[in-house]
Length: 606
Ligand code: M6R
Image (cartoon, rainbow, N blue to C red):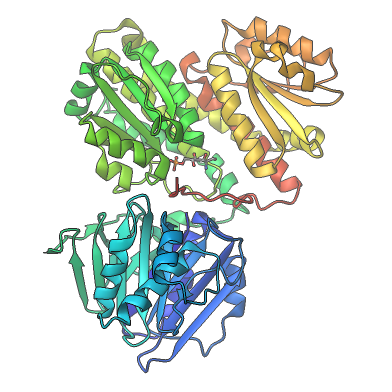
């Protein structure tokens, strides 16, 4: 949450670099933004707004320029979205400027202990940090020493990625990180810092990963990294082989629709990444061995990734015969269940940066249990810190509502489960033709995507004005119902529940009234008849029902009919119309589809 970017260079283009970087980081938070820039003569400018990067751009004038600067796009934690609470924050004497991603756990204690006489202008935890730098520098410390002393009094519950500037040292950036992600962008005649490589891909493809406890001093021509033990370290850059245009919208009005449309191609990409010509599977033997030696898989994730884990549960149990549990990361970390003798942990995360999941991984590493991260972002924190990584190959996902990463997670889980089962000689795995099945899925997804205008019309007829709605299903369709409900609620603000259809009659059916939309997902042959009965029960109470079903289970009057695919993979297809219903409902209501209120794409606070 929150995106930070900084540059120190030789040209007066810092404003353009910061604005471009912030636009790329806006997915991380978008309630307010700001930049601070200095030029080689020491002229400094601070510009902040409540609102989006577009609003920040409107406030810039041609005289605001420089070769060094820091920028921030915010997702509010402490203090409402406002100009005063927007970053960069500055110290009382106007010398130090700071942007921050994370949360300072002991900010109140620090304020009381060191800063009782300081006049604060914001309600943020961040301002305490920049005031502390001034406080310690007033004791005669250099900026670096004051920065390090400030870091030393921040407690372990905190998370931060900081970028600091001292007006007396134009051309120098100070950075530090603990738990929140931060990369150095390495250029020929500049250096930068950013929360995500995407922010600086226009400038460079070479980045250095920072690790927790690092303190960095950057100029246009030097990078000095001190690790947590105070050693000066030389870290080799890695190359990001991604075109800056991969994160562009192209002709699409919204990223969400572009990303929904990309799903058939992502299925093909996963097949070519993990499957050989002859259909054999290409996954690290050491990972397969570690998983097959375990007696229980623990899938840990948040939000949509958690829902992909629910489908993974079916796949690992049915294809690999390994008992599997799925846990919400924010619950698991502080209330760990009794673990089996040989647990193996799977972290599912599009971003690879989710703080709730990371705090579990830290504990898992302390306990020395083996782990795998399945993520879309190579070199992300969860990827670096787990023993193994499998990539989603979905391409950058920018819309806050996760779509293609969800289906990619399920597809990668299916490939992995198939291979695990195959090694163990399990019949169901041997019969599961993942290569052919993924092709069929890609084609079925394409059929759904091609029918988007019918779904747009359904959204208009049924969801345009409703205040609440239900998705129902059983078995694997229940997993999809929960994800479908999250999609609809997060982008259209329709209060939506995903429900086990058989459970409705145990209480929730009381909420059904004349016209309540109930969307039933029916792709599981074993439970189809039961769900059909539940549909009759809600119709009898006035519900306005939409049925999403597979071709082989379809009945006259069903609104959305999906091409048949392998029953274990139906969630990959049945979710597509639900994603489209969410997209069109949000669009028809005039909401900001890609940046729904109160949310951010990468949730780096607990
Ligand atoms: O990056 P992650 O997959 O770890 O993110 C977890 C959730 O925050 C995320 O899936 C969220 O629920 C989606 N953006 C919702 O569409």
